[in-house]
Image 1 (cartoon, rainbow, N blue to C red):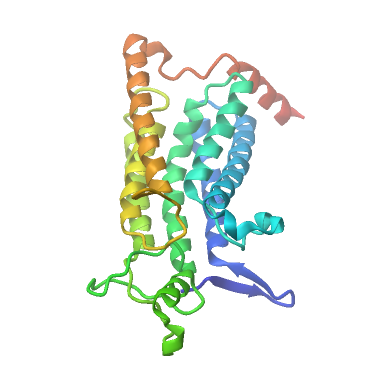
Image 2: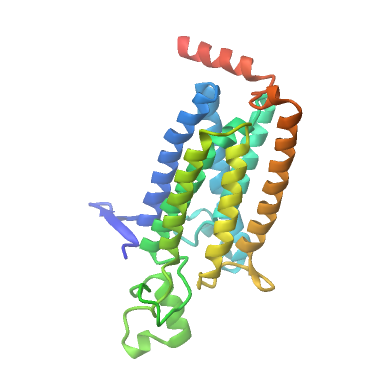
Length: 294
């Protein structure tokens, strides 16, 4: 495990593996989303602005949901802005990022569905990259499994070890590794990469704007709900027998299925509107052309 990827010489600044992979996911998302959004007719400046709005909204939402679930950890208000204190929750980031993008594009009178389609593969690739980041950090770990042949153990200093030390007193026994657990973070890596590839493949056959986003959301929701079953970390928030992420996954899954049905019926009624970019798209194109000429 490598929670700290490296230290900056002289400054003694620790660079965390999760933070690096979060940055990699944002960078990959920037290029991938730009590629598909521009293919769908969204102008460059609109794409760039929307990505920034989405990323900022996503980071704020991911932090706020984490804080809401584990609010006792943030009695000191300064800890709210220290990302090395506590963490982020994916659903908060995805929901707030999508909401921020929708509001931004609606104000420009540009249809948000092509943007969501362009961003869908990045959402699933982010699932894989952040799963790897969690594995390196030792967080979001799996349930204890003493019989599983591919179970993993995390060293002292990681969240997995600290939780098992709390339960079993590992340090007092002179132990330096956690109990064997399900490598649920690596499951997320594999699932994220598979779904990423499938969404890109399915994109070739889409029939209306929003289809890839909704299919990706349905797959992501189902995958997240299932992966939560294998998790063993305590800081997830619970509503009766389900984690907060599972409750959100079910709600988003049902909403995505309903949205898919509505868009499919609209497409069947009027195929000419399948890829409508909205009444404000021409103004956005003109503004983009002007900015490039300047």
